[in-house]
Amino acid sequence: MPLLPLRDIVVFPGMITPLFVGRDKSIKALESVMDKDKKIFLVTQKNPQDDSPSTNDIYNTGCVGKVVQLLKLPDGTVKVLIEATEKAEIVKYLKTDNFFVAEVRIIQNKPQLVKSKHLSALTRRVLSRFEDYSKLNRTLPSDSSVSLNQIKDLEQLVNTISSYLVLKIDDKQKLLCISSVDKLFEKILMHLENEIGVLEVEKKIKSRVKRQMEKTQREYYLNEQLKAVQKELGDLENSQDEFSELENKIKTLQLTKEAKEKAESELKKLRSMSPMSAESTVVRNYLDWILSVPWKNPTLINKKISNAERILNDDHYGLEKVKERILEYLSVQQRVNKIKGPILCFVGPPGVGKTSLGKSIAKATGRKFVRVSLGGIRDEAEIRGHRRTYIGSMPGKIIQGMKKAGKSNPLFLLDEIDKMGYDFRGDP
Image 1 (spheres, one colour):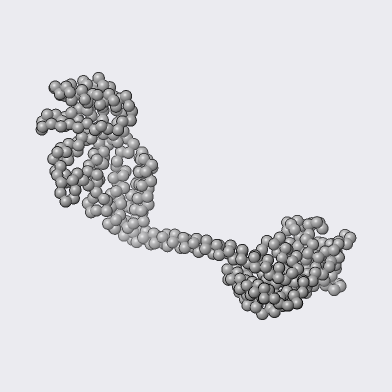
Image 2 (cartoon, one colour):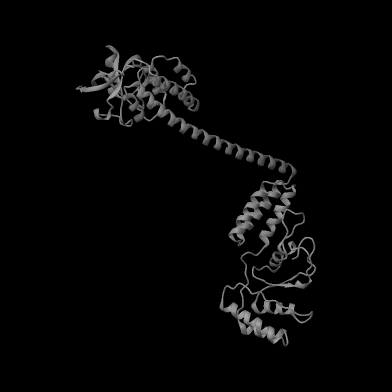
């Protein structure tokens, strides 16, 4: 019987398959059967990319098919409609030069004399799962599950389901080789369960991606609407200029990693807000403060003890023990690059030179001097800063002092600590 090697398709008994044939050997095989009984052996080749398969490149099990219709196309190829009738396997190949010819043996499925309860339950389960599979797989015909319920013959039913399954060629070929109906049902059920699991995961992923895309598109649409409204009000160009200016500042200023990340997130938030909203004013004010603080702009420290001693003696007469303690403190700082405290504490009556000593230390070390007067402060938020959600909130005196000094390592003098008060808001 002439043999027709197929690419990327496994034919099951009962299938009517349209094929486009272009290889010379295959066309000659079809032409030879048209003059006889129109029967041809359909079998799948192992490598679909192979244009000239040998006998070793072709599976042994296939189907005997009958040519229903053959049409020669203008480009030399042939369109043929073939109905697969019986399952068969190759016994041996016969010698021929024009095309493959093989002696085949018809494979009869093992007869099921009595439909057992196991087989009935298996059939019902397969039909139920195939219905779920057809709902998830959009490539199948919409009425495929309905048509299966009308098939009474088990062998025809199992072949039809096998043809509908979207599987790899190797897996489909293994199904074709099974001759027992109940084993074939079990194998199909296993494939159905596996494919349904994969399709359900794909469906979840698609729905999640769709929701994310809808959210992104909605945000984009709303932002475009907002820009259109702002353009009508004449605010868009000014806003864009401000955003560009802030973005350039973030790139050019020497910010710490944390400050840069925070500034970028606040700018992103500011872009999506209306300039007329109260929240945008709060965010803009906070962003301005972040960009105005000298994060990486320290003063070069003068560590010469002799210079410090000279400045202290020039600025203050007497106070030998105080000067000695200050010089001792500066000496330790000179020897140890990183030192945590202690903080120098000046105690004395008014007018003895506590504040001026702080100025002298700043002058001796080359630091900027910042005096923070704490007299009359009753709320610790004035020192550490208010929450920015409050109306009229301001940074604390420490940050304000750093901004005023313009350096990241000024000398702070916390003056008049003894004059701080306390009330219901706390005790600084």
